[in-house]
Amino acid sequence: MVENQSQLNSSYDDVGYFVIRNYFNTDEISSLREVILKFHQLWKKDNVKFYQEEAFNSSLITGSEYLEPDDRVTLFNFISSKKMINVVESVIPVDPAFMNTQLFFNPVNPQLKDFWHRDCQYDHDIDIQKQVIHNTQVVHLRVPLFDELGIELVPGTHKRWDNEEEFDVRQEEKGRVSSEGLSTGKKIKLAAGDLLVFSADMIHRGLYGLDRLALDILVFDSKADFVDYVDDDCLPETSMLEKIDNPRLFMNTLHLKSKNR
Ligand SMILES: O=C(O)CCC(=O)C(=O)O
Image (cartoon, rainbow, N blue to C red):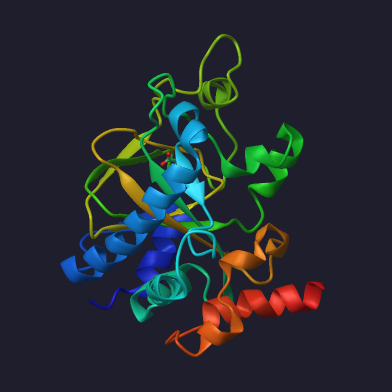
């Protein structure tokens, strides 16, 4: 399936997200799932307390801590496959760069509720958040490995500040909590094989439930100032680059890293 890049770009620009149903076939998802489950089992064993008490995601899935080089290469090839790059380039047409991966699952601790946030709120105070939402944002590509309730997001908030309800809930002001419903929220149910692309700084939350396990791939525009967020270990080693069919996404990050040293 060849997606129309300009249609994807205009949806992303208008509302901050788009979803492509059945983008990946069963074989693509089952080989990805096999590698991701290996990572997840090892990660859980190594993080028992954190997993039991507070975790709802892990990161650095492409790193060397849990996966063998061949499995890492499988992941790198999935992330930079033609299909994926076609979508990445619809949002970032020139020099997109790989940032990281995250794996989202249901928290074991039943007290943890799905919560509204903008990713930038973990790095910036309110005044700066108001500014950075008008700058270039990190892009998330969510690949659900099982059918899931998906993501709830507030369309358009990649470009606008919170209304009063959104702000009070997200920031837990005036007695509100971040797991409350928002009247502006839109639920995007996802099935294995779908691809959801959304802006990290729009107001969103994951919806806990079913057997969710979703791989999020994070990419950014090389022109934006995000390279310091990249952990060297999640990038391919030099010896792996020749086994990656289309390594440009990673080469762009490696290039930014080398300029920064
Ligand atoms: O799925 C989740 O639990 C949260 C998702 C999220 O916040 C994200 O992908 O940035």
